[in-house]
Amino acid sequence: MLRLTTGLLYIGPLLAGLAGQGWAMVALFAGIFLLSSVVLQPDTWPRSRADLTRPGAAVALAALVATQVLLVVMCFGFGRGLGGVLAVQPGLPVYLPAALSLASVPLARWMRGA
Image (spheres, rainbow, N blue to C red):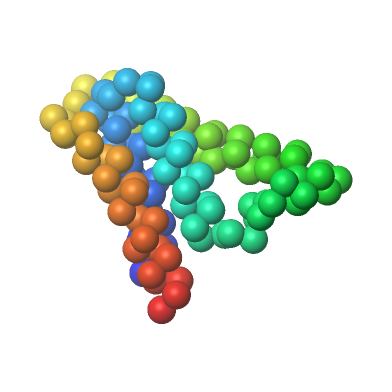
């Protein structure tokens, strides 16, 4: 069940790309992916400013953010490419893909806690 809820996280940018939404949506999905990382893996994030002064902490945080943004861009780009190749552009409401991704965060937290 946890994998299904995590799948919702990735389906959001894929559907947004498939629906032909603009690249500006990448920032929104990157924020949702980072929120998911904070909620599901809080130990990877610094708890205070002092944590950032540790050697390599800032680099690790930047790598985590870059990885999440890269995942979003890949899913979104794959959706855009798939929509272009198949000449399909579903008429989804703008909020639906983002709502799916955002809904996965509390669902995954609930599944992990259960």
